[in-house]
Amino acid sequence: MKTRTLKKDKVNIITLGCSKNMVDSEVLSGQLRAGDIDVVHENEKKDHNIVVVNTCGFIDKAKEESINTILDQVALKKKGRLEKVYVTGCLSQRYRDDLEKEIPEVDAWFGTLELPLMLKQFDVDYKAELLGERLLATPKHYAYLKIAEGCNRTCAFCAIPLMRGGHVSRPMEELVKEAEGLVRKGVKEILLIAQELTYYGLDLYKRRMLPDLLHRLADIKGLEWIRLHYAYPSKFPTEILDVIKERDNICKYLDMPLQHASDNMLKAMRRQITRQEMTDLIHLIRDKVPGICLRTTLIAGFPGETEQDVAELKDFVLEHRFDRVGIFSYSHEEGTSAYDLEDNIPAEVKQQRAQEIMEVQQEISFEKNQEKIGRVFKVLIDKKEAGRYLGRTEFDSIEVDNEVIVHSDEKLPIGDFVHVRITKAYDYDLEGEVVVLPEAT
Image (cartoon, rainbow, N blue to C red):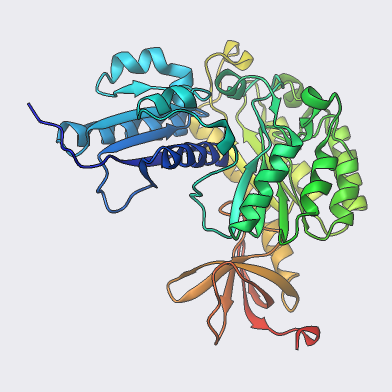
């Protein structure tokens, strides 16, 4: 029998899935650190003895990745290279009973809202006064700010409410305080995230308060970019657009998943909106905020989707020429209302339809990027890779959007802003040279 070493515990946190999971891992890290526990993210040194896997359970591919990661960590435990394996996050929340039986080697399973219980495994008490204190897993110049948990929507395909519960907004004062703390640590860009940003405040303040929150955040000195992710189109609070237009440090960028464009599919998906209503909203957004970057996400292969539905979706993408598009193949999820429908479209057909949509978008993206050649953009330098700098404009979010390949004879500090004249454009990326604007000389 192996005797326990007196060496101090070191915890490695592996985060899978979305940025909301990353924030949860950062909060866990902050609480562990406050309890005098050594903690790291994605530890490459392999000198930890405990691992926490923060899982995703959103769609089939994400679930498969989560399970494989858990099994990899269990294998290390069996070899004596780990002492404890803990699992948290959406997959654990959703399938805990089954997983406990199938992978008994995991020491404990925790749901999405069981942080205090997990901390007790380390003899650490949850400290409410540390709210907002996070050990960032991102580079220090940008961070995510989760303004709410859960979702009240009833989209037919989505299992998020099963894993995250109903919508719960965080108090505005708490969010402003956390944002101020992030800026003091060197954060220049804050990405606002929630399952649904536009619902913010309805539960706490009995009205949609995202515009008020944006004004408060935009007042924070040193916060140069505020970016909005995951706005729901139905009952969209258009006052948000006035704030985006008015405040210079709010990126002219909106991530608004639309999921489909055929009225048949929108109704089947329970999206509470029609194609015409979405069209009117897109025109309104672009009229109120000229030059805004619109990102959307779509689903291919929902039960009952016909070739006509796909043709309508292609036509919609061509009509509105979105700046950014992501597309998923439909995943048949237990517990959702769509699970009662027959998943009647073969996987290869779903994939083919998704590919067809992305080919349409690829051409649009190339044309839009070509229009940027010769223009100068403010670019945030994210990293240096293979001898070149990579950055983003205000129209690009981290990981999911375009990058700018930046050429410079001078050293460019990571996290600094520079002005770049675009010299080349590709389907999804830009290339350019640092320039000094006349007013900066």
